[in-house]
Length: 117
Image (cartoon, rainbow, N blue to C red; front, side, top):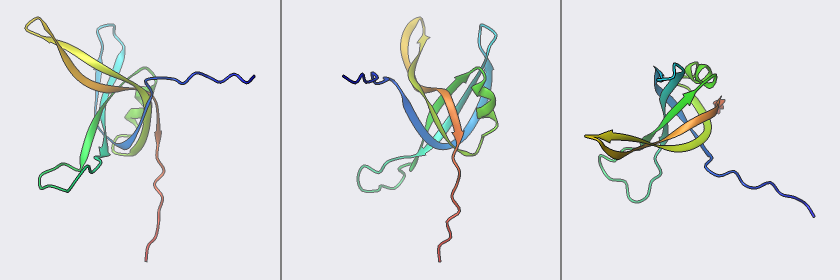
């Protein structure tokens, strides 16, 4: 009987253009990187005026991957990681924050140079 590996849950892969990189120091003294990967927004119906055709996905990274991501700003990349929802409090009340992709791998997408006539 062949054993199969259990699927890994909470894994996401997103490709797009990397922008808005910001480095921050966390309370424990480690470096964190915050950025966005801009993807094309899927068309779900008739195109309407004023509808954005791109959407940013917030990224967060810590450790060595920060240096890799920092070198790729403005480039088309593929990132992989886990989704996490950030929480914050306002006036002592807990609030839901945004969903972020916590990056554990990042690679440059090679752009093909296709010639059309």
